Image (cartoon, rainbow over all chains, first blue to last red; front, side, top):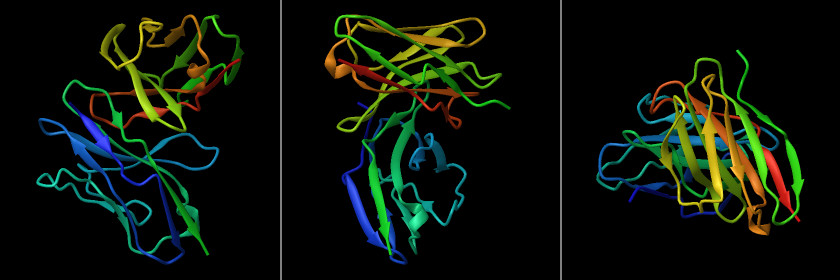
Length: 108
Length: 112
């Protein structure tokens, strides 16, 4: 069965500290992996996808097929990074399946 | 271009009633998906429509149904509402499969 697991419900860090939001997935095939972000009072939006291999707002994510993980990382957290982060996967002919999300709280 | 539009933004219904929510996707997008968002369960997939056909379905009871029209607009219906149906219902549209999904602002349904 296809599944996305985000083990941390809440991650609290100080400004300037490194951030790693964990995501593990289960899918028999080659899925497309995404990170979506929801800032306070804003709609859910795409942050990055593994196929583009970009760095967005300082965030990167590497797909590790051996560990079936797609962790989101940022070397120095900013207060404006505080938001809800969702990891999601999409397979051939499937819709987006989301993890339960991790709330990132960055304080000064 | 205009984003995904969901109407209404807020709804209050009584247990046992039914409700219909509407979603207008981005122009040119043929795929529309629906999700239920709650604090405890996060985003749960309801169903996906593509060119008026239901292509995927999540694990929800038959009280939850949907449809898509020829202009790609979609509606979802929940019958015999239960208190546990209170949630934010999100709609997303995609152009091609496995591409970025664009989300609406959601409809906040409260069942009392």
